[in-house]
Image 1 (cartoon, protein in one colour):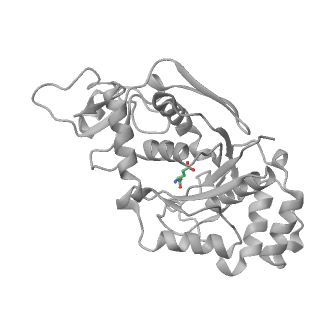
Image 2 (spheres, protein in one colour):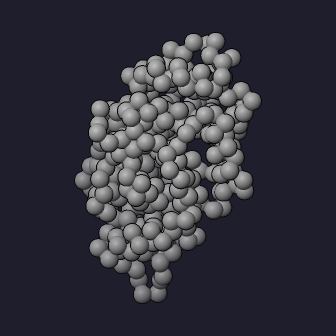
Image 3 (cartoon, helix red, strand yellow):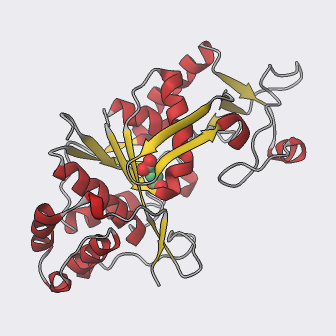
Length: 300
Ligand code: GLU
């Protein structure tokens, strides 16, 4: 057990919490509590076009109703733009980030390698400077051919060669918004996060975040990527796959489902008990070792 543990749950306010996000909340919360650690909540609201009015309040209300108690105030990424800007400037000054003039179409025409999580690996067109007649649209981080790996507590050793698998990736988008990869990395450091427990849908992002940590001189936290809930077609449950919102009138039953999904031997009758009873059971019985070491589990 570590001397200091600080975990977090970092939802994006793009809609109500669904079962997949509840699993991430339960897993990160119980891992933190079992290790006597703190658990912080961060609202990842930098992607303003995807933000749904009222969703942040609804998510916090749902967490409260489900009996989660977080430490300290909620951090809103929309209030952190200055910090992202100054870290981006530092990367630019150190020659680690650069302006890129490429449009989507130019990248599609010149790239010839698929990226690890869809899209195309950026071929590095603007790496050595922009031609005089072009201006930067986006800002990218220079990556290397050196493998970036880590030992995930659940998924084992994960490694990427970022140059090949992703390419120099975007930190500040052409629409002027900071990219998730930069915001999450700067905030995990800012909040002193030691342990990241989240869904395995983010496993492919982790080497990018570790590379950014190295470029910025940050510590690397421990990682545990929980299995994600998938539908019968094997797609991750999300707003896009029309995952149903949680039933707020059935908080105990939803928590019991999440615990069972995480491999816990939870008695079915707890579904009819109170939320407090479920948390009392979890405080006594939570076992990280029982969490399935899988990237996805189909619900049906
Ligand atoms: N905001 C991200 C999401 O909702 C999660 C970020 C993270 O846990 O690193 O998918």
